[in-house]
Image (tube, rainbow, N blue to C red; front, side, top):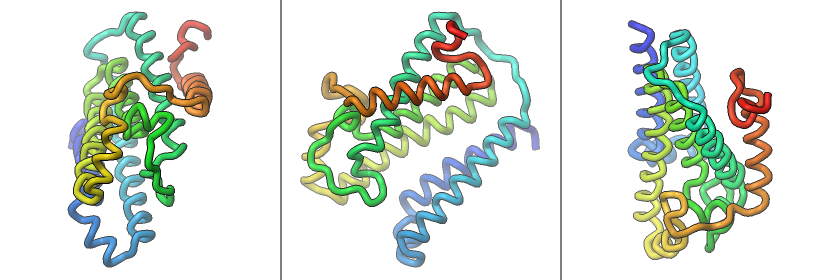
Length: 217
């Protein structure tokens, strides 16, 4: 099996197992194992398949980019990654999708921007990384993350629409799938500060100069 073939198989396993465990296989496994053991199984499968993806990605070594990116592209990427960091930081506050979270009747913070802030943060990261790297292996790896994030978010919406009934329509009327789909909303002070610190720290630790460090460093 070629290097790209290994990555393709690992990618298919990562994405496929997520969708299978999140939807068709979930009810039966939860009934047999219980919610806690199912969550452990789900996490283990995700960690193992994603770990294999990373291994295959790194084993391919350096590849020649299919396109080059000008400074304007790097600047736009920094802004988008800052936005993704704000969404990710804010997704841990008042998010009813988190395990054990209390019911939330009115979205606030980043949840008023999109009802899937964590998924969109992953999707933005994947899209930005793909645009900057521009290699065949990045197309597979980042494309998988992008598909899983946005497809998974759409799947969550469909599931909640079936289960919640009128409560779903009440929730969906206050926030959108696409960020800022219902107008500009403030992400909140915690998300803004936390996301900015996350962005600065992650880009500073990056092995290549990215974000503002591309010009400051």
